[in-house]
Image (cartoon, rainbow, N blue to C red):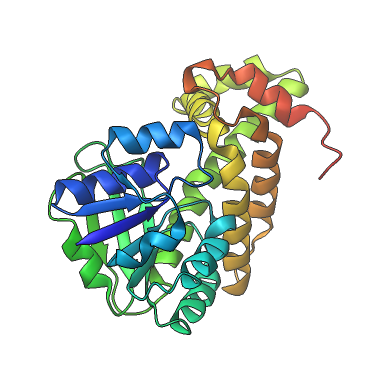
Length: 281
């Protein structure tokens, strides 16, 4: 089996590694990608086909990119003449997955909806790829080895997206919430008092703020669009959604931490970013 990964970021390359471990050839497109991505792909032995026009030899294409780029990537693939199986494993809404499905279907490309839960698949049991769509079992069959678990949710496109949305709404939403709580307390002059009370009644809360700051702030630029997708999905399901609009604002304020190493993210700097007025929002 020949697969193309668009694109081998930290998550994408871990999916590629699981496919290679399962005995498949994995391609990638270096055109327009950063030197960091090129080094990552080379280290994991992905084969560079240079430009997207060369993907027609692939049996499958996996799109793993920020959700705001998902439609653009799908359109670009459709324009190449590729006619294999396409999986969108981005954190997009079910509505966006249906849009991409229709776009690809009109170009003779079959579609599988994917949703990845967990960190990059670099350890046993860490990461699950949920898939839905008529050919989702073919995606599951790809991964016979490696650290990525694949679970089928049936033939209906949108199921994998809905599960990913629900999961991300809690994990990333909760991180945004607790950071803003601590930021408000800091600005009101009661941060130390809050930490003391948390130590008595919510012993995990302070640690959660530290984890949220160090792990999520460098990825906040990607989470903005994901929060918007979550808000849209909640609204369409008749559930209150404005909380995730606020979470999008939280991550928008943290976007300057993009690519900062986790160990260099300081909780005080994160809180200051949340406190300062943001006239663009």
